[in-house]
Length: 156
Ligand SMILES: [Fe+2]
Image 1: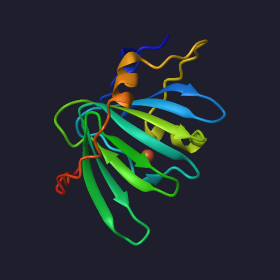
Image 2: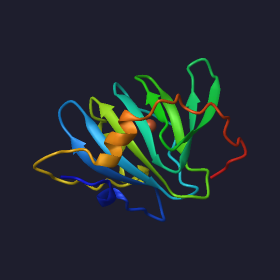
Image 3: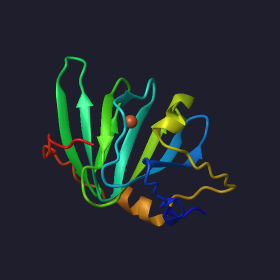
């Protein structure tokens, strides 16, 4: 059995990606963000994904094909959908640590495990059971993502 606490490892240098599960059809990651850490602007290729905020809050910026840029803050319990073709950047602009759960289908390509984009901590397991905390968040997340506009001056 896996427990979320096993994946609560932060890295002062870059956001820490922890691979929880990867099959032919899906991939689950826990990502731990220190204040100020952020991704580059990126897409996920043919992968459809969701990001669930487990602790703290993240700021997501969408880069739409028409040039529109939309930033929103996602607080604990919020779900961000990152559909195929989505281009975005995630940042922890808060002063607190943040933990997010990422579910992708199909699994992300190898380019997303580039050490420059964070590191992965692959855990081999015989039996997979999502932690109770994760199940609770997934079952009890009734709210739409917070539409609050993030701090545009956030520069990390
Ligand atoms: Fe992403």
